[in-house]
View 1: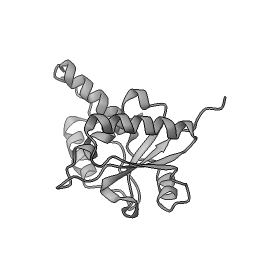
View 2 (view 1 turned 45 degrees about the vertical axis):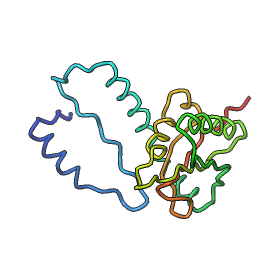
View 3 (view 1 turned 180 degrees about the horizontal axis):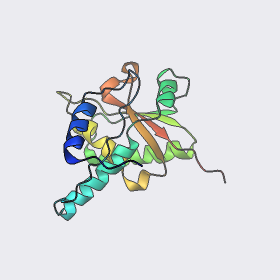
View 4 (view 1 turned 60 degrees about the vertical axis):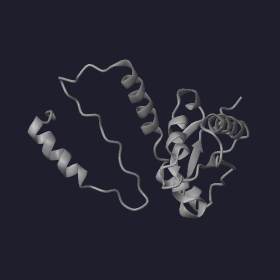
Length: 167
């Protein structure tokens, strides 16, 4: 039977775990939420933000083998959308319509081009993963991952779509 770690053991383990890096081509494992007995009271907006972050973290990372197939174009990228030059509202609407259409057409992987922004900090680059993690897209989006360099690199995302249920 395993015993829970003592606080000083937890601190040492977190320092050790912080030095570990995934092998090339592998994604980093999900970090478990630290369990504390004296967690401060959270206000409602922070709770909503944490819920969005959990949804986004659940999406992070397409399975490594599937991502490899997409990068090597063994799994076809069914469609692409370029969000350059769109406002946030128009980009979000276009992205959602695009994803629902691709899902209905039976595509399993799509490419979303956000651009990097002027200094690599573009607003669409930051916002699109949050949008993909929203609850109303949970039945469509299986995972997201930064695109390979030849598909746009840091300025694009692979979006893995779930299988359409048989009717």
